Length: 182
Image 1 (cartoon, rainbow, N blue to C red):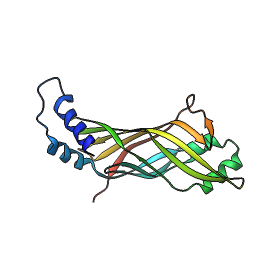
Image 2: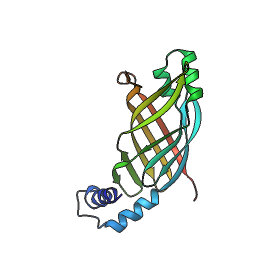
Image 3: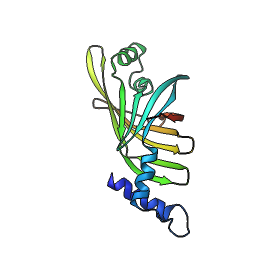
Image 4: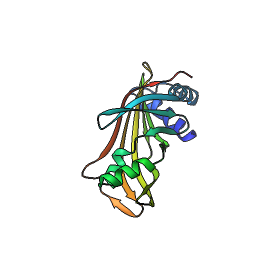
């Protein structure tokens, strides 16, 4: 957390313009970070059907109820196996740590460290562990309390098998997730 506050203070002081530092200090950075903390609710499209997810910003960045179909359909190309995997998959919760932040007067850009999402699924009576490494970023508009989220699967494994995601990327996008009242 101190690393994030330091980065935010540094960006605020020196990164916003080529002119003199803006005079932000660690307290200003903490206040700015506290402004964006909270839970945002929005929709993500899966097969052109909106599915509601929630995104929580605190010490970590957490995406709850992440739909697994885009990932699992890459692992299981057989329709019956895909159905088994989807039925057995637990509700996915993706957690990442903020790595960098940029700020202007009304927007925050959070860039998270790549993180693994692991889900256990049962297919044909065997439990498999599906691991997706996800890179993510969020743009938060503090005027409208809206969040835009972009997540991309950069690596995908099922047990020890590597699944190619370089030629046909798996991406998630949430636009205009609204901050919920505390």
